[in-house]
Image (tube, rainbow, N blue to C red):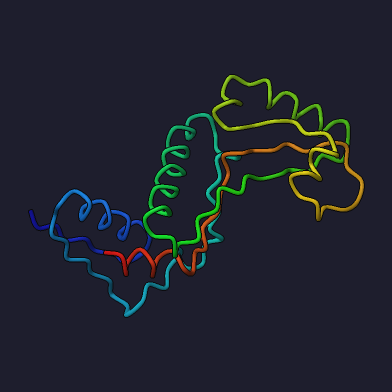
Amino acid sequence: MWVTIIGGGILGTAHAWHAVRRGNHVVHLEREAEPRGATVRNFGLVWVSGRSSAELDASLRSRTLWEQIGSEVPGIGFRPCGSLTLLRTHAEVAVAEEVCARADAGRRGFRLLDPDAVRAVNPALRGKFLAALHCARDGAVESRQALPAIRAAL
């Protein structure tokens, strides 16, 4: 089957990637010589932690897809780095404790870490804080590298 995809940003390129993976012939069109839209201005954060409950399944699927593509196209720079949200007040710790008690906390990879455990995750951290909310499922891609790498792999 022939598939025409219009748009060379990450959405169009991801559709092209999956169409090719399914054995389709793809014509991938972009109005610019190189895409210059939101994709190349994106920070490359693959966040699960900050998504609403309604978005959780989609964000976990997105993270899985980035990891899968990253294993096949190392040039995208996918890193399953997790995230740390430092907590400096008792009120912030109380909110993080509530977050960790939510039904979806395990799916998100949430853990509340004491300062020693936080510094074990990131030894470069300095200053005073009481704890940190760690989200093991968060990740990142190098947004300026990802799109050209995926397009080259097509």
